[in-house]
Length: 86
Image 1 (cartoon, rainbow, N blue to C red):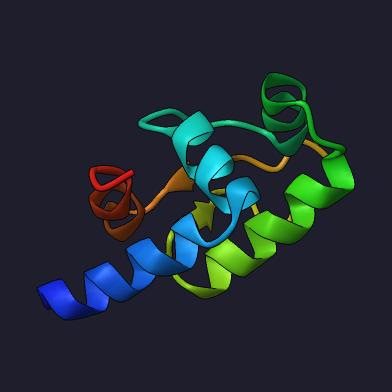
Image 2 (image 1 turned 90 degrees about the vertical axis):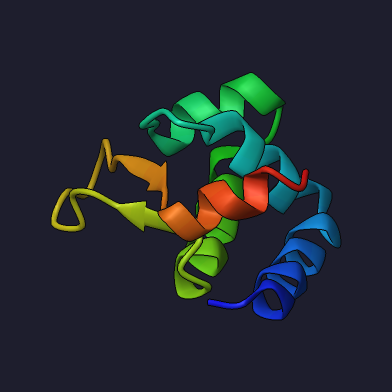
């Protein structure tokens, strides 16, 4: 992915306070939506919706899609590249 595409994604993330907070909150770690929600002061359903959007942009990945509860999320390499600009 070239710099221009990365910068477009940086703009996409920066355009939303929720997206920025969630990417930063996950960082290099693996987290579940409820932990993210409590750390940044959002409702879990909002976090889940934003995680879905970030997943579609290949910025985060769910490590256990089959789980109904306790889904684990981490930033992809692309997400970590975007995080450097935040």
